[in-house]
Amino acid sequence: MRDCLRSGVGSTLVAPSILSADFASMGDECAGVIASGADLLHVDVMDGHFAPNLTMGPDMCRALRRRLPDVCLDVHLMVTYPQQFFERFVDAGADHLSFHIEVTTADQAASMADDIRQLGATAGIAINPTTPVRAISEIVHQFEMVLVMSVQPGFSGQAFRGEVLGKVQALRELGYEGWIEMDGGLNPSNAGLVRRAGVNVLVAASAIFNEPSDKRGEVIAHLRSGD
Ligand code: DX5
Ligand code: ZN
Image 1 (spheres, rainbow, N blue to C red):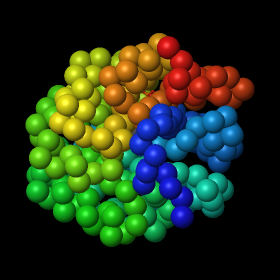
Image 2 (cartoon, helix red, strand yellow):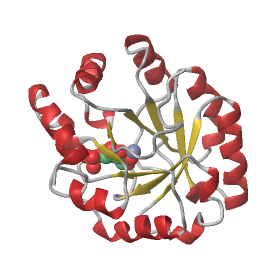
Image 3 (cartoon, helix red, strand yellow):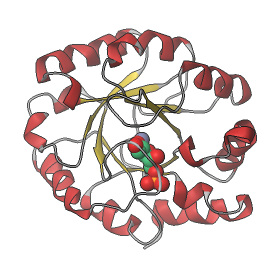
């Protein structure tokens, strides 16, 4: 059983978002970034309704699991009805499922986290840039990970919104000791700031995949520990 996000919260993880990978060579692209030191693959799922884009589904996880049997698949569900997809993504090989608080209530979200763990995956709650921490403060301890969006869901390549860093500090002040993932506009120039705020899972799509494949290891190392 892959550990992925079940423990080890002390380290810093780098999760390339495959949204910016070359879809025509997805298997090689993902094998390449894992060989270059990435810890997880961040799979951005959008339904064209919660987020204004249509990206990928469970079959992408199935294909990646077949190609990379030991990889950790961190699925980010930017969809209006995430509970419809929990079982299909876990059956397809997902290790972790994050869904958005904006599509449900705090009570329902806590119960959805239990549903995800019943299926054998870890659970994450995601908040958009304009959603306050208080939307999740009562339930945050029921999740292995909190995903703090630093862009509005929809597309890679957007500008980093630094105002969300205060939310990370607020979560740590709440005593949240789990994984905090930041997603959107991360690159080597802001990674140090993001880590110092308390983030320990850094997602990057364009900062990694816009580089030639032989340069991606350097970017991943910089995101993990560069200043
Ligand atoms: C946005 C996605 C992000 C995005 C990150 O809706 O959730 O994961 O792909 O892309 P970059 O790192 O290029 O901002
Ligand atoms: Zn994402």
